[in-house]
Length: 236
Image (spheres, rainbow, N blue to C red):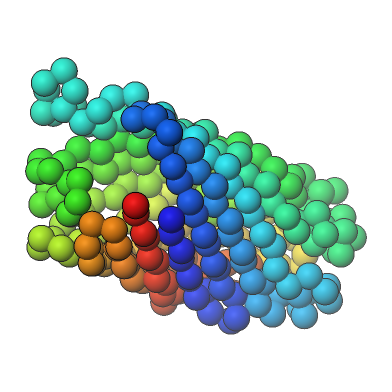
C-alpha cells in the first residue's frame, strides 16, 4: 500500500493512494486513486468544479525474471496494461461549454495505457537498495502528462538510502492539446518536458519513506517548477 502527496503550487495539489497484490508469482494486480485539486483554475474559468479524480486499474505480468536462464545480464522484463477512469473531466467539459470535446476531442473520461519495464541490478535488491541499478520504462499513452517514455537511474546509495533522478526525455504535445489551449484563451498552458529527483529511506522491511523535488513546467494555468512531494509505502 502506498500514499503520495505532491504540492504543485498555487493551491494545486495531488494526492494518490495505491494498493497492489500479487496473487501469483509473475502477476501483479493493483488499484490507484488520484485526486488533483485544480487550485485557482475554477475561479479563472468561472466554473464550480474544484477537483478531478482518477481511478487506475492495473495489471502487470513479469515476462522475464532478472538473471533468468542463469544469465546475470538478463533484466527483469515486465509488461503492463492500465485502465484509467477520470471522474470529473466530463463535468469540467460541460462547465466550459463543451470546449474540451468539441474543439480538442481529449476529454474522454477513460483510456488504456501500456507499459514495458526493464530492470537490472548487480546485487540483491529484495529488501534494500541496490548498489548498481539500471531501470528503463516505456509508456504508450494518448493522455497529457503521462504519455512519454522515461529513463531512470539510481546512484549514490548506502545500505538503506537511495537517490534516484528521473528524466522525461521528451514529450509529444498533440495538436488537440494546442487546440484546447487556444479555445480556453490560453488559460490552460501548453505542457512541456519535466524532470524529478527523489531520495528514499528504507526504514525496515515493511516501511519505505521518500521525498522528491520536481520541475514540471506548465501544469493547468501556472508553471509548476520547484515542486516537492512525499511518498510512503507499506509492504506486508
